Length: 498
Image: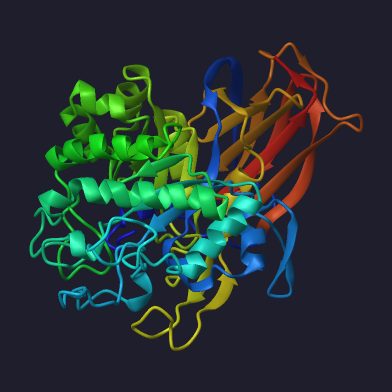
């Protein structure tokens, strides 16, 4: 989210360009796929809506690109839809009104207008969501994309980066005067929880959106939330988090939303997530249904430790709920996903912003509109498709909700089993500088029949390919693919029975 994050760019960045040719230099490897080790049922892939949807959320072509697996015409070209099925909706903290007492939002000198998300509860004079203190017409474009995603089969999570500006001590939704300073007023702990629960209820009753979870803390322990920050954000100590969580559970329950899960705490790193979980007592942990974490820490993140604490020891769900980076090739992002599958074992994985004004972060770039108010003076314009888009397709179009993530003995390979359709999906990376022949050993399956025509379909991104379909053949219980340097390949093997 914050552009300071560069750690992932060194986790295996490479330029995915050139011509797809076989070289004389190569490395061969064998990868065993073991269906007896199951790392959980996959819930899906997603994106946060936030800024890009605030700008372009009214566009059906973008909804089709991101939330379907169909072929979508964009920029005069047919593209494969990414098939994302999780939309994270950002409840805003900003509004441009003046309250009856003359108070107004205080704005950071460094926040760009399009990073201000308009919130719904705009005046503290009434907690009644039907009163004039609330504006349910706010944030029209982001809500529009949320509905489009839902109509295309996506599930959704509600999250907030900051309480409403008037709940903050300095009325600034970018943060307190200094780093690691509380900014939410203590008497607004419960009203903040009430705000999130009211949005969740409104979404269910009026928008047709039933949030599966609510996440009240966005990177709460981070050091960059301060009054001159470039976006909305709020530092919340672990002690404050422990006080707000019971209020959130109570406010959800009293609105009939007892089935809505609480996710926490969306820390920016897995190291911080471990520390936060360790700081929570048993009662606080009991209120958390799923541990969310962001993946900005890079290669050295304590993924396995967080999995052990959250899942093995505590029985909680676990999502990587936000990751992004500035490696324009996208390969380091693919390697990060593979590292998460290998050690973190989340059941969902979410990219921060599929559209970004920074082309290096984007799957599709765009130019934000200008203007300081709710409606920009000039509209935003979508731009070009980047390498990350095609690399994401290698994962998201093939590893689908309901599949089981199973074990491989290679750190650069993930396997998912579709037991309903007897299909095995394998995604493998070649991070070397030479051609690599990879043989997948499927001997641990009782039967590997393949397709009637004997063809094994595979898709490649890199070395001149942009999610290009190719093929290979099944050799009894093994499949060999040829992967050029700095490439990602996805293989689908049919007729596979455990």
